[in-house]
Picture 1 (cartoon, rainbow, N blue to C red):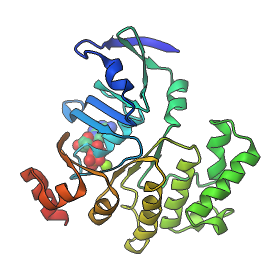
Picture 2: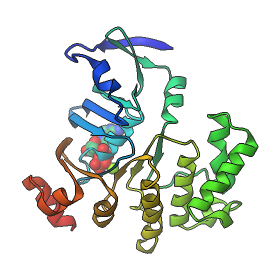
Picture 3: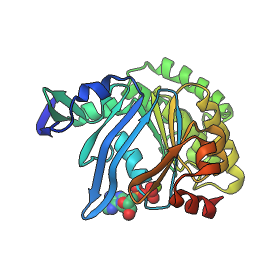
Picture 4: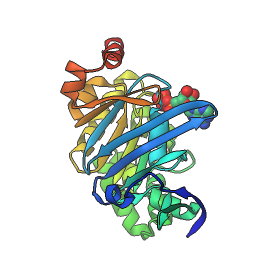
Length: 273
Ligand code: ADP
Ligand code: MG
């Protein structure tokens, strides 16, 4: 299930060590450039299982690229990411890493759900069809099993009455709640949110944040890029501040929002708070 080797683990002393520790998401020494622009510079981050992490930072700081790297939508130049003890995008033989084949990448990616700013629902499918497509195709559920789970998920996001609607018939907030339900339909171990409320009218933000708050209680590991500082303060275990491809500061919401150590963090918060 491998193609060309992409290099030796080299200075990485004992990769099995950090892989085996059981944290839900381990990000080790990740770097990524687009041309000459270094967008991620040696990122280190450990997210325990069931934790909720909010990533904040100015536009262009690398937040989306980091999220995309976690589910291998973006290939990194160096470093490793593991989710639930499995390397993302690679398999290891001896001390050499091999990139997985597309089909294996796709299969592993189903452990890692992603919710985008612009919902990305299938416009030509009803809400129900949006929710059952991947579980049937990718997870091999029967149609009846997939439908039963879809009902459960729609009840959780408060949209049972919209099961036969098309995305265009829903508000932005409702579409985003369907998108969250669709991500949950694959029973991911980790759920990534990239500015899930940025495209919404202000009056619709609350209903989506409420759904995410509820998820935070269910034990799925959540990583949320957000500008909603009040929400991050309430829901996150850990706040990560990024700027210029670096993690500048990591801490509890109280620590970062009330007593930031780094002047760059304080300058950013002074603008958004
Ligand atoms: P954020 O989500 O924090 O706004 P991004 O991760 O989207 O930041 O982008 C970080 C930097 O990388 C930006 O300067 C952006 O223009 C650049 N970038 C992102 N994706 C690409 C790409 N596919 N090609 C070239 N540059 C990119
Ligand atoms: Mg972004």
